[in-house]
Image (tube, rainbow, N blue to C red; front, top):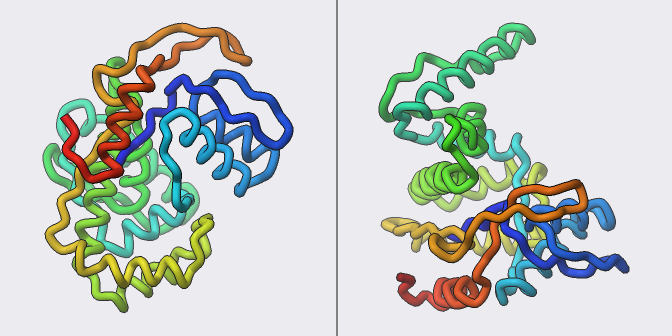
Length: 249
């Protein structure tokens, strides 16, 4: 599993009759959406990844916040070890969520947290996965690690479901997922891959990889801002190794 850092400074693919220059990688999605909606967002991002990294994306799945929370809740939550500033920030989110539930007469009260391993339900898991400001030194790289921890938990728990339970879970959230993969194909993939999930070791990477990028201030359309300048040759080599199942140093 490879996560692309949002501040990566890339050459945006020219798209829908528009000429694009250099910008953050997440701008590709935003511009594609503004020009051609959801399908355009996915396509422009895919083209930008292909042009900059040489990786062809086979299919896209876009998960809404609600679908994310529903999956986590359906699996009984995710176990996350909260320590130090992460624990303090998640206590803050717990209080904010409980205030919201109470004010709006909603169910879903978050119980007391403790420093250590906690089972986070959908709402808290979403805030944990999105968080990148637990302290002044926090950043998007740390958020990527949090997201990967949550996904590892989801995959681990899903691996223990029967094919019928997995199909029921897909049916429950499919209406909240945007994808260019057909429902039938998705169910086929799930059925075929389920036997391989047991004992699966998920290896996580980030792109750009450590030691292959540096921070720099650049002029963007909305003003001067910090981005990640990238050694593209090195990252293309690393990504090719990942795709080919080769060992990555």
